[in-house]
Amino acid sequence: MGNLQLGIRGHDMPKASFEDLVKSISDAGFCCTQLALAKAITEFNVGSEAMTSGMATYMKRVFEKNQVEVSVLGCYKNLANPDEAQLAQIVDSYKHHIRFASFLECGMVGTETGAVNTEYKYTPENHTDRALHIFTENLKVIVDYAERMGVCFGIEPVYKHIMCDIERTKRVLDAVNSPNLRVILDPVNLLSAENEKHHEDIIKGAFELFGNDIDVIHLKDYIVRDGEIISRPVTLGEGRLNIPYLMGILKQNKPFINVLLEDSLPENAQQSRRYAHQCYDRA
Image (cartoon, rainbow, N blue to C red):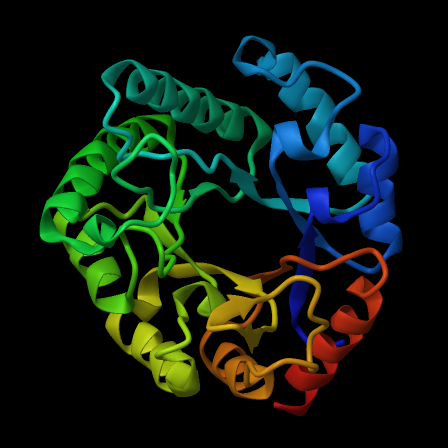
Protein backbone atom coordinates (compact mmCIF):
# COMPACT_ATOMS: atom_id res chain seq x y z
CA MET A 1 0.00 0.00 0.00
CA GLY A 2 2.18 2.86 -1.22
CA ASN A 3 5.09 3.89 0.96
CA LEU A 4 3.15 4.63 4.14
CA GLN A 5 5.05 3.25 7.13
CA LEU A 6 2.11 2.73 9.50
CA GLY A 7 2.44 1.51 13.05
CA ILE A 8 0.68 1.45 16.39
CA ARG A 9 1.58 1.98 20.03
CA GLY A 10 2.29 -1.31 21.78
CA HIS A 11 0.04 -0.49 24.73
CA ASP A 12 -2.91 0.13 22.39
CA MET A 13 -2.81 -3.55 21.40
CA PRO A 14 -4.48 -6.34 23.42
CA LYS A 15 -2.45 -7.32 26.47
CA ALA A 16 -0.16 -10.26 25.73
CA SER A 17 3.27 -11.64 26.46
CA PHE A 18 6.05 -9.64 24.86
CA GLU A 19 6.65 -12.07 22.01
CA ASP A 20 2.92 -12.44 21.33
CA LEU A 21 2.51 -8.67 21.43
CA VAL A 22 5.16 -8.10 18.77
CA LYS A 23 3.69 -10.89 16.63
CA SER A 24 0.21 -9.39 16.97
CA ILE A 25 1.49 -6.00 15.78
CA SER A 26 2.92 -7.65 12.68
CA ASP A 27 -0.12 -9.86 12.09
CA ALA A 28 -2.36 -6.79 12.28
CA GLY A 29 -0.52 -5.26 9.32
CA PHE A 30 1.65 -2.72 11.15
CA CYS A 31 5.35 -2.37 10.39
CA CYS A 32 6.43 -0.22 13.34
CA THR A 33 5.54 0.59 16.92
CA GLN A 34 6.00 2.99 19.79
CA LEU A 35 7.17 1.01 22.78
CA ALA A 36 6.53 2.34 26.27
CA LEU A 37 8.17 -0.46 28.22
CA ALA A 38 6.19 -0.30 31.45
CA LYS A 39 2.86 0.16 29.65
CA ALA A 40 3.31 -2.60 27.09
CA ILE A 41 5.24 -5.27 29.03
CA THR A 42 4.12 -6.81 32.30
CA GLU A 43 5.56 -10.33 32.22
CA PHE A 44 9.10 -9.31 33.26
CA ASN A 45 10.88 -6.42 34.92
CA VAL A 46 11.50 -3.45 32.61
CA GLY A 47 12.70 -0.99 35.26
CA SER A 48 15.92 0.95 34.92
CA GLU A 49 17.92 -1.81 36.62
CA ALA A 50 16.67 -4.32 34.01
CA MET A 51 17.46 -2.22 30.91
CA THR A 52 20.63 -4.07 29.95
CA SER A 53 22.24 -4.71 26.60
CA GLY A 54 21.12 -8.32 26.96
CA MET A 55 17.46 -7.36 27.27
CA ALA A 56 17.80 -5.04 24.30
CA THR A 57 19.42 -7.79 22.21
CA TYR A 58 16.60 -10.18 23.08
CA MET A 59 13.93 -7.61 22.18
CA LYS A 60 15.74 -6.71 18.98
CA ARG A 61 15.69 -10.35 17.86
CA VAL A 62 11.94 -10.58 18.49
CA PHE A 63 11.22 -7.37 16.60
CA GLU A 64 13.42 -8.38 13.67
CA LYS A 65 11.82 -11.83 13.47
CA ASN A 66 8.42 -10.17 13.09
CA GLN A 67 9.67 -7.38 10.80
CA VAL A 68 8.53 -4.66 13.20
CA GLU A 69 10.61 -1.55 13.79
CA VAL A 70 10.66 0.32 17.09
CA SER A 71 10.13 3.87 15.86
CA VAL A 72 9.92 5.43 19.31
CA LEU A 73 10.96 4.23 22.75
CA GLY A 74 8.52 6.16 24.93
CA CYS A 75 9.60 7.86 28.14
CA TYR A 76 6.93 10.45 28.88
CA LYS A 77 8.10 12.09 32.08
CA ASN A 78 8.01 15.70 33.27
CA LEU A 79 11.25 17.54 32.49
CA ALA A 80 9.97 20.67 34.24
CA ASN A 81 9.15 18.99 37.56
CA PRO A 82 9.94 21.59 40.27
CA ASP A 83 10.84 18.95 42.89
CA GLU A 84 14.62 18.56 42.65
CA ALA A 85 14.70 14.97 43.90
CA GLN A 86 11.94 13.90 41.51
CA LEU A 87 13.58 15.75 38.64
CA ALA A 88 16.87 13.96 39.30
CA GLN A 89 15.08 10.61 39.06
CA ILE A 90 13.38 11.72 35.83
CA VAL A 91 16.68 12.76 34.27
CA ASP A 92 18.19 9.43 35.32
CA SER A 93 15.27 7.56 33.73
CA TYR A 94 15.73 9.44 30.46
CA LYS A 95 19.41 8.55 30.41
CA HIS A 96 18.60 4.87 30.97
CA HIS A 97 16.12 4.97 28.09
CA ILE A 98 18.60 6.71 25.80
CA ARG A 99 21.29 4.15 26.56
CA PHE A 100 18.78 1.32 26.07
CA ALA A 101 17.70 2.85 22.74
CA SER A 102 21.31 2.73 21.58
CA PHE A 103 21.42 -1.01 22.40
CA LEU A 104 18.02 -1.60 20.78
CA GLU A 105 18.95 0.50 17.72
CA CYS A 106 15.49 2.04 17.63
CA GLY A 107 14.45 5.30 15.99
CA MET A 108 14.48 7.60 19.00
CA VAL A 109 13.44 8.17 22.59
CA GLY A 110 10.25 10.21 22.69
CA THR A 111 8.68 12.54 25.23
CA GLU A 112 6.08 15.23 25.71
CA THR A 113 7.09 18.59 27.11
CA GLY A 114 6.16 18.90 30.73
CA ALA A 115 4.35 21.10 33.22
CA VAL A 116 5.63 23.31 36.01
CA ASN A 117 4.12 21.18 38.77
CA THR A 118 4.73 17.76 40.24
CA GLU A 119 1.27 16.55 39.17
CA TYR A 120 2.13 16.97 35.47
CA LYS A 121 -1.14 18.72 34.71
CA TYR A 122 -2.28 21.81 32.87
CA THR A 123 -1.88 25.23 34.45
CA PRO A 124 -1.78 28.62 32.67
CA GLU A 125 1.79 28.97 33.97
CA ASN A 126 2.81 26.21 31.55
CA HIS A 127 2.45 28.72 28.74
CA THR A 128 4.77 31.36 30.21
CA ASP A 129 8.29 32.21 29.08
CA ARG A 130 9.57 31.13 32.50
CA ALA A 131 8.17 27.64 32.00
CA LEU A 132 9.67 27.42 28.52
CA HIS A 133 13.08 28.44 29.87
CA ILE A 134 12.94 25.77 32.61
CA PHE A 135 11.98 23.06 30.16
CA THR A 136 14.57 24.10 27.58
CA GLU A 137 17.44 24.17 30.07
CA ASN A 138 16.56 20.72 31.41
CA LEU A 139 16.10 19.41 27.87
CA LYS A 140 19.63 20.51 26.94
CA VAL A 141 21.03 18.10 29.55
CA ILE A 142 19.10 15.19 28.06
CA VAL A 143 19.94 16.05 24.45
CA ASP A 144 23.63 16.37 25.33
CA TYR A 145 23.53 12.83 26.70
CA ALA A 146 21.64 11.64 23.61
CA GLU A 147 24.33 13.14 21.39
CA ARG A 148 27.04 11.31 23.29
CA MET A 149 25.12 8.03 22.95
CA GLY A 150 24.36 8.58 19.24
CA VAL A 151 20.59 8.57 19.85
CA CYS A 152 17.90 10.97 18.63
CA PHE A 153 15.49 12.49 21.13
CA GLY A 154 11.96 13.34 19.98
CA ILE A 155 9.86 16.06 21.59
CA GLU A 156 6.10 16.14 21.11
CA PRO A 157 4.30 19.49 21.42
CA VAL A 158 1.01 19.38 23.36
CA TYR A 159 -1.38 22.28 23.86
CA LYS A 160 -1.72 21.75 27.62
CA HIS A 161 2.01 21.35 28.18
CA ILE A 162 4.88 23.83 28.05
CA MET A 163 5.74 23.42 24.37
CA CYS A 164 2.12 24.18 23.54
CA ASP A 165 2.20 25.47 19.97
CA ILE A 166 4.32 25.47 16.85
CA GLU A 167 6.00 28.80 17.61
CA ARG A 168 7.23 27.62 21.02
CA THR A 169 8.36 24.37 19.43
CA LYS A 170 10.52 26.35 17.01
CA ARG A 171 11.96 28.37 19.89
CA VAL A 172 12.99 25.19 21.70
CA LEU A 173 14.57 23.71 18.58
CA ASP A 174 16.55 26.90 17.98
CA ALA A 175 17.64 27.19 21.63
CA VAL A 176 18.86 23.59 21.90
CA ASN A 177 20.30 23.63 18.37
CA SER A 178 21.13 19.94 18.10
CA PRO A 179 20.88 17.58 15.12
CA ASN A 180 19.83 14.88 17.62
CA LEU A 181 16.70 16.78 18.68
CA ARG A 182 13.71 15.81 16.55
CA VAL A 183 9.95 16.43 16.59
CA ILE A 184 7.14 13.92 17.01
CA LEU A 185 4.19 15.72 15.48
CA ASP A 186 0.70 14.89 16.70
CA PRO A 187 -1.61 17.49 15.12
CA VAL A 188 -4.49 16.72 17.51
CA ASN A 189 -2.30 17.34 20.56
CA LEU A 190 -1.82 20.93 19.38
CA LEU A 191 -5.55 21.62 19.34
CA SER A 192 -7.99 23.28 21.71
CA ALA A 193 -11.66 24.07 21.32
CA GLU A 194 -10.58 27.60 20.34
CA ASN A 195 -8.14 26.73 17.54
CA GLU A 196 -9.30 23.36 16.22
CA LYS A 197 -11.24 24.84 13.32
CA HIS A 198 -7.89 26.08 11.96
CA HIS A 199 -6.06 22.79 12.29
CA GLU A 200 -5.06 22.68 8.62
CA ASP A 201 -3.25 26.01 9.11
CA ILE A 202 -1.51 24.61 12.21
CA ILE A 203 -0.33 21.53 10.30
CA LYS A 204 0.86 23.67 7.40
CA GLY A 205 2.60 26.05 9.79
CA ALA A 206 4.43 23.22 11.53
CA PHE A 207 5.88 22.00 8.27
CA GLU A 208 6.85 25.54 7.28
CA LEU A 209 8.49 26.36 10.63
CA PHE A 210 10.34 23.13 11.39
CA GLY A 211 9.45 20.61 8.72
CA ASN A 212 13.03 19.39 8.42
CA ASP A 213 12.94 18.35 12.09
CA ILE A 214 9.68 16.36 11.98
CA ASP A 215 10.66 12.71 12.27
CA VAL A 216 7.56 10.80 13.42
CA ILE A 217 3.81 11.41 13.14
CA HIS A 218 1.23 10.42 15.74
CA LEU A 219 -2.09 9.89 14.03
CA LYS A 220 -5.51 10.06 15.63
CA ASP A 221 -8.86 11.70 14.98
CA TYR A 222 -10.93 13.81 17.35
CA ILE A 223 -14.29 15.31 18.24
CA VAL A 224 -15.14 18.28 20.45
CA ARG A 225 -17.30 17.55 23.49
CA ASP A 226 -18.15 20.07 26.22
CA GLY A 227 -15.30 22.31 25.07
CA GLU A 228 -12.70 19.53 25.20
CA ILE A 229 -10.80 17.75 22.44
CA ILE A 230 -11.66 14.04 22.65
CA SER A 231 -9.62 11.51 20.66
CA ARG A 232 -10.30 8.17 22.31
CA PRO A 233 -11.99 6.08 21.00
CA VAL A 234 -12.62 8.04 17.79
CA THR A 235 -11.97 5.94 14.68
CA LEU A 236 -9.93 7.59 11.91
CA GLY A 237 -12.27 9.24 9.43
CA GLU A 238 -15.13 9.63 11.89
CA GLY A 239 -13.88 12.78 13.57
CA ARG A 240 -12.93 16.30 12.52
CA LEU A 241 -9.26 16.00 11.54
CA ASN A 242 -8.63 16.51 7.83
CA ILE A 243 -6.61 13.32 7.44
CA PRO A 244 -6.48 13.44 3.62
CA TYR A 245 -4.88 16.90 3.92
CA LEU A 246 -2.25 15.62 6.36
CA MET A 247 -1.52 12.57 4.23
CA GLY A 248 -1.04 14.74 1.17
CA ILE A 249 1.63 16.75 2.98
CA LEU A 250 3.34 13.59 4.21
CA LYS A 251 3.30 11.91 0.81
CA GLN A 252 4.89 14.95 -0.82
CA ASN A 253 7.38 15.89 1.88
CA LYS A 254 8.00 12.85 4.09
CA PRO A 255 7.84 9.57 2.13
CA PHE A 256 8.44 6.58 4.41
CA ILE A 257 8.06 8.62 7.60
CA ASN A 258 6.87 6.47 10.49
CA VAL A 259 3.21 7.19 11.25
CA LEU A 260 1.90 5.71 14.51
CA LEU A 261 -1.77 5.24 15.34
CA GLU A 262 -2.50 6.64 18.77
CA ASP A 263 -5.49 6.22 21.11
CA SER A 264 -6.88 3.40 19.00
CA LEU A 265 -8.69 0.44 20.49
CA PRO A 266 -8.43 -3.21 19.42
CA GLU A 267 -11.99 -2.86 18.10
CA ASN A 268 -11.27 0.02 15.73
CA ALA A 269 -7.55 -0.31 14.91
CA GLN A 270 -8.13 -2.17 11.66
CA GLN A 271 -10.73 0.29 10.42
CA SER A 272 -8.36 3.15 11.25
CA ARG A 273 -5.46 1.35 9.55
CA ARG A 274 -7.44 0.87 6.34
CA TYR A 275 -8.62 4.48 6.32
CA ALA A 276 -5.07 5.80 6.79
CA HIS A 277 -3.81 3.75 3.85
CA GLN A 278 -6.75 4.82 1.68
CA CYS A 279 -6.10 8.51 2.38
CA TYR A 280 -2.38 8.12 1.71
CA ASP A 281 -2.87 6.16 -1.51
CA ARG A 282 -5.33 8.74 -2.84
CA ALA A 283 -3.20 11.74 -1.88
